[in-house]
Amino acid sequence: MNKKSLNTAARDHLWMHFTRMSAYAKAPIPMIVRGEGAYVFDVNGKRYLDGLSGLFVVQAGHGRHELADAAAKQASELAYFPLWSYAHPKAVELADRLADLAPGDLNRVFFTTSGSEAVESAWKLARSYFKRVGKPAKHKVISRHIAYHGTSMGALSITGLPSIKEDFEPLVPSGIRVPNTNLYRAPNGTAGPDGRDAEAFGRWAADRIAEAIEFEGPDTVAAVFLEPVQNSGGCFPPPPGYFQRVREICDEYDVLLVSDEVICAFGRLGEYFGATRYGYQPDVITCAKGMTSGYVPLGAMIASDRLAAPFLKDSNWFAHGVTFGGHPVASAVALANLDIFAREDLNGHVRKNEATFQSYLERLHDLPIVGDVRGDGYFYGIELVKDKATKETFDDDECERLLRGFLSKALFDGGLYCRADDRGDPVVQLAPPLICDETHFAEIEQILRSVLSEAWSHV
Ligand code: PMP
Image 1 (cartoon, rainbow, N blue to C red):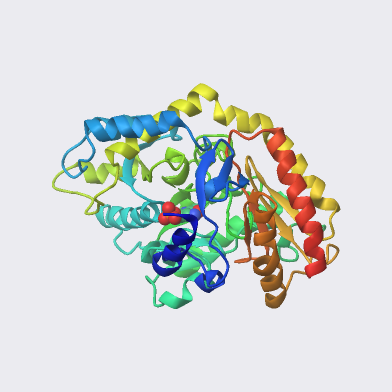
Image 2 (spheres, helix red, strand yellow):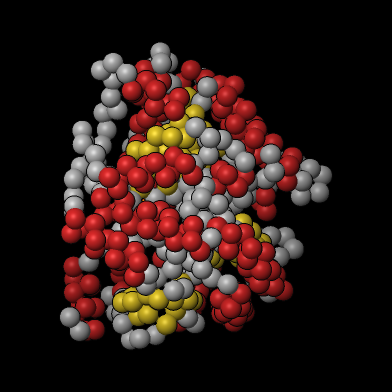
């Protein structure tokens, strides 16, 4: 198809995800045709720095022939077989490798095709586990305000974003929300007298989980779902001690700690798993995206030996599965992707360069619109404010004009693909491929500087 017919066909037939399609009634739909390293190219040949790794996915960068070759080889050897009562070597090898990499006793891998399915699976596991160990009333889940955990009905019920839930109410009952770890907007008195005591704030935020469990009744709560760094809202890293306190609470009330690492696993934070970075032990890890660097879809729920145990005896089973979970081609690509991680020490590369990335982004603090720069690893959010001193944020109309009307397009036109998001307070989100270095950070900073300076005049 040529350029024009591609656009017409997209307009007529393609249902884009989370997209106001009317925005493209007259304007052309950005059409990305090729990727190479940290860059993608559109249908006109224009180059963009991929500042979001596609969608927090392309860890090893674009255009890796090695991953394409692994897919082709596996597809010609064994394209498909299910994991329903049968196994195939690539899924076994990958499960073995993930069990090795995952912290502590997280040794049992249940494959899915997406992050939503991994989250959905973890909630179902929590419910069916407690039924098997004689605590059948434990079924509720706790998660944090504005956190995104997926879009299938269960995962959406765990998601803490009212704006993407309203249309689908009523959802699965028994999802409970607690505060997130947005230190920049910590409620008065929760972060010490000067509002900057991260440890005190972390303690306060973690204790809200205990409070929610008490309020709901410990016998009814099955799990708490937390990202190592919460993405939605613009990168909220955990304050020191937060996860250690959450772990204590979960142990006290026999509530499972699910670390939703759909974004944070596979090097995003300089470790294979975010829990390793922050030194806590989850009962379950959910992951997807970066496991294959996005060359094919694959997700997983990695559960502890303790959770798997009841399902390994007698006539018990986990009555759950998906046709494409652990697809041979996806498993082969994930193994080849992990080979790249090991050979090129991508985690070490992130750890070595993250301070440089941070320092380039922090230079933007001199702009009046930049309120906060926060994150860890190769995962940052820049919060935009109307007034730096008071932290006053933009109202709905201003957000509409600023983010949708100007910023997203201007950044893209400027050669940077990233995301301007206002599902919480307005933020620009950045998560470049893990191969990026100082030259890429400088390019990101320079484009952001020029566009954010101009944005101020659109407020
Ligand atoms: N959990 C988290 C933390 C996510 O960021 C996402 C997707 N961005 C999901 C779950 C859902 O993953 P998917 O889109 O692959 O279903």
